Amino acid sequence: MRRFYTGSDLNRVHSIAELADMARRRVPYFVWEYLSGGAEAELTLKDNLDAFSAYGLHARAMVPCHAPDTSRALFGKVLPMPMLIGPTGYNGLLHRDADIHLAKAATARGLPFSLSTASNTSLEDLVAAAPDVDLWFQLYAMRDPAVQKNLLQRAAAVGCRTLVLTCDAMVLGNREWDRRSFARPRQLTWRNKFDVVRHPRWLKQVMWPSGLPGMGNLEPYLPPSERNPLGSMAFVGKQMDTLLDWDMLARLRDQWGERLLLKGVLHPADVERAIALGLDGVVVSNHGGRQLDGALGSLDALAAIAPQAKGKLSLLLDGGIRRGSDIVKALALGADAVLLGRSTLYGVAVAGEDGAGRALDVLTEELARTMNLMGCTHLNHLDSDSVFERRQIGRAHV
Image 1 (cartoon, rainbow, N blue to C red):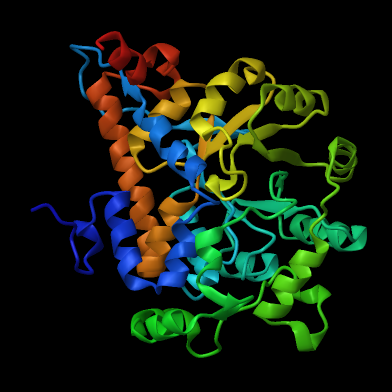
Image 2: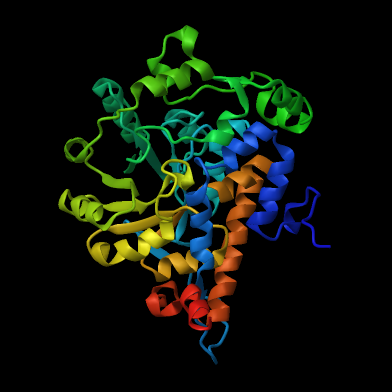
């Protein structure tokens, strides 16, 4: 019977799925739901994964298997791999100082790291702990313009040159299974409380000695008595700007003089508007299947968007990346690079920086191996002719 490795030697972890299985066993149930679950019936969560399975890869014969060139130029820098760690909120549920662990793992491999507005570690503390980080900052639009302006000033002050505005979370998605972990808002059910006690390793790596952290980027705007998880979450709920529109984005383009990306784009018409506003890039994303259930899978959206974006702005993708071959497929369909979410979060839940690093290394190894097996010597050689739709072939034989 097949089964994943159950020990602690990261060198024996051979896939992101194996890391995910280790993370599932390490964290309490309510944390696993927060990490792995999606909205409502989780149709989009599933579609993100299925979209990659729907594409096959063409292989060319008689190509010598030298080490392929996996580098990719992005915003004036040459990355050793076409990937970066994307922004994810409240990572402190997985490991103490998880944001720092993720940033250090990315930096050690020459990759950018994106810090969320809703991170547990503040911009200032992150850069102090990882001074060489290539830092991107993800912004949730704030109702209070003074708060938003100060967040931008703080990001610039610590050396951030890339801002990512998220546009698909003005209203939180209906994450039913996440909500079922709680008897009432922010109060775990008794079953989940008992389950927490059954996970002493998680208690040690997350709760000891100070309990759950607040949101470091937002605590300066809270009174001292509310600088805690409940206060931070309440503040986010009140401050999230539900009236975000293209005019606000135009104003942000004027306010922020560095690179600006829009995250949460799934429609070609929205790419055209982003180009018209002079944005530097868009992230094709459905928030990991955690917002609108039934939204288009990220890879399917990419195939429709890429023709509009080519040569006009940088095109990035997140959602569903679990294999190096998934990265190959995304680049072949027009992405310049991919953002990682759950893949590196599984790693940090298992072993902090080392676990996140193992996730990056697994994807790196898989990417190089996939290119060798395809007879592809350089990422720049990938295009739509490098892939085929397995679904169409299946229908042709029915």
